Length: 400
Image (cartoon, rainbow, N blue to C red):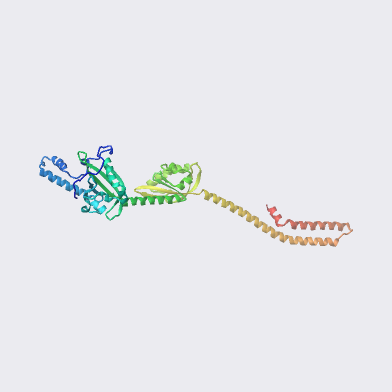
C-alpha cells in the first residue's frame, strides 16, 4: 500500500462548530490507524532496553508492515483511506478485488468515482464526507460502481479521522459487497411469502406447535374453523381447541411420546372431536406430522371440519329413506293397477250376465220374478261399483 501526503482541505464545517453536533474520533482513538512516529515511540517506551532512535524506527517500520498485512488480509472488505479532499491515499487488496481498480490506478484519485452517476449529480459524495465529519461516523447501505461500470449494493462505513489537535486528517472507509447477501435474503422472503400464500389457501386448518404442545402458527383456515384469531391461540397450549376429555389426556400423550416414541395420533389420520371458541364441539379428521428443525421438534396438524360432511350424509340417508318409501308406493300402485285390470274383466262379465238375465225377466207380473229382477239390478250395480273403486286414484288413496 502507498500513502500520499494530505494536500489542502475540503470545504467542511470545522469540528466543534454549530454545523456539527459531535466531533469525530481522534486518530489515536481508533483501533486501526496508520502508523506514526509517535505511536512507535509509545511502543518503544514500554521497553527500557529499546530507547534508541534506531530501535524506534525499526518498531515504526515493523508496525507499519504488520498493519499493512492486516488490512490487506481482509480480502472480503474494501478498506481504504481518503485525505480531507476525498482523494484515495491507502488501498487494500480487498478493495482491488471488490472494486476492480489496482492500487497504482486509484491512489490519488477522487473517491466520487465509486458513486453512480445520479449520486454524483446530486452531490452525494461531498455530502457523505460532510456528514461523517460532523457526526464522526456514518453507516449506510447504498449502491457503488466497479471499474467495469457494474453496480453493486454495498454496506458502507465512513469514519472521520482527527489528529490530537482536533484537525481533520482524512477519512477511513470500509466497504462490503452485500449484493448476493441481499439477493439471498430477498429470495428467502419471497419463498416465505409464497409458502404463506399457499398455506393460507389450503382449505384444511393448519396448526404448528412445539414438542410441548404450544401453538406457534395458526392458519387463516384454522381461524375460520375454530373462530379464534391467530393472536388468541399462538403461545397457548393446543389443548384449548379440544373438548375437556381430550384436553385432559393430550399433555400426557405428548410426554409419553417424548419418552417412549409410542405414537397416539402422529403419523395417522384419525377421526376426533374439536371445540370452537364458543364451546361447540364438532367432528374433525386429524392428521399430524413431525419434523425436526435445528434440533427442535415441531408438530404440524392438518384439521378438516367434518360438520358439513356429516350433515350431508344425514340428508342423503333421509333422501334415501324417502326414495325407498316412494318406490314402495309406486310398486304397490303398479300391483294394484294390475289387480284391478285382472278383477275388472270378470266383474264386467258378471255385470253383463246380470243385466242379460234382468232383460230376460223383464217386467213380469209375478211378484217373485219382480224381486229377482230387483236383486239382479242391485248385483249388477255393485259389480260396476267394485270395478270403478279399483281405479288407480282410488287405490293410491286407500294405500295412503
